[in-house]
Image 1 (cartoon, helix red, strand yellow):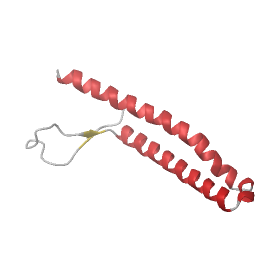
Image 2 (cartoon, helix red, strand yellow):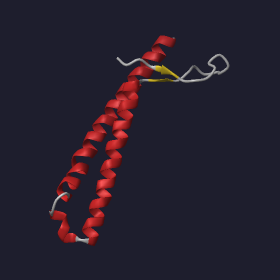
Image 3 (spheres, helix red, strand yellow):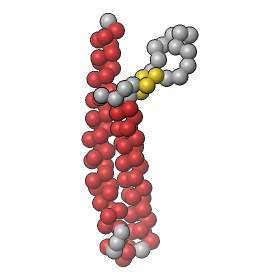
Image 4 (cartoon, one colour):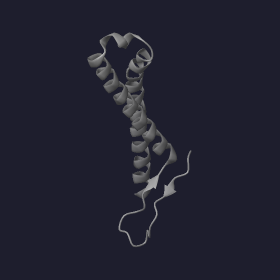
Length: 99
């Protein structure tokens, strides 16, 4: 498991405990964001191509650009659910340990 990193700052003065960021959670979050943003950009590009040059949609690289949202959005959703499961599991363990 990846080692958590502590937030910077004086933890004795703050009323709340320091926030920990897990490298795995951070990597999953960036992967989800990157896949979703790439899918949206490809989706917008395909709409622009269909509106401006409808005959160009069948030539390369447009079939690949069309395939990115078709596969990227489901993969992004699965990774998002994995990230939520990891975060909820970690928080449940922290709550159990603090009691």
